Length: 135
Image 1: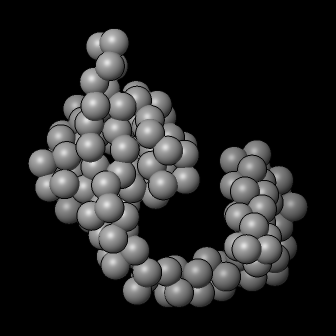
Image 2 (image 1 turned 180 degrees about the vertical axis):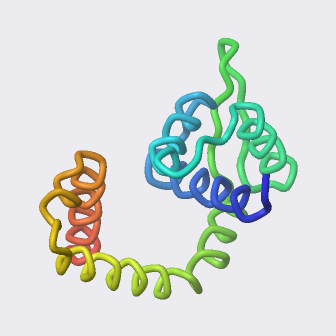
């Protein structure tokens, strides 16, 4: 798997653990799939390999209880998430804004924007932006 895709999984794992708290491995995998599956589907083996690397590097902790492993973010992982993604956040927001503006100008806009996956994710984006403004 290209390094870039591994990095995307790593950042999504960290972000998911911040926003949802501790998660079992498979629940975390399903969370990651929700975000990347329309484009690509990482294998479960690759995913668990990345989780193992993240534990070894101190980004996340793995705790086993009743035969299930729960992953949580560490303070080092939180720091890494902010330091490694914040510089790119403005650029990504700008690109996404331009693409969404372009969608609004498409002749077949209703067909594109009525896609259930796109519609769902745009609604989540809208709620997230509203929550950021309120805080």
